[in-house]
Amino acid sequence: MNFLKWSGHRATRVNVSGRLIEQPEKQASGVILGTKKWMHSMTRKGTADISSTIHGRSCMFEIKSGRDKPREAQLKEQELERSAGGVYEFIYTPEQFLE
Image (cartoon, rainbow, N blue to C red; front, top):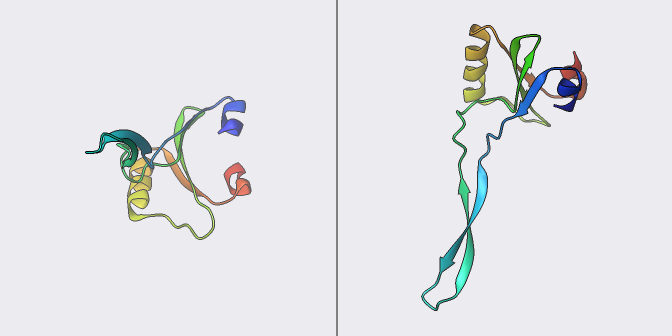
């Protein structure tokens, strides 16, 4: 993201994983315990990790590491983005991103 911004482009990290929230819960004994609950993201499945605009063109980047492979929802989102004239790429290495 920094590279994109330093190069004069727009870039935003998209939180697709959701978030952990803490909720106080009063027990019958009167003790208040902090419970944690996972709140799923409202972002559409398959949305890329980074949304950017480069020279007026929508560019989406899904960052992969190790043996991580694209999910079906990501492949569908890639197809939608490309058919709309944008770019949606799976990035495995920094060198691949720079290409």
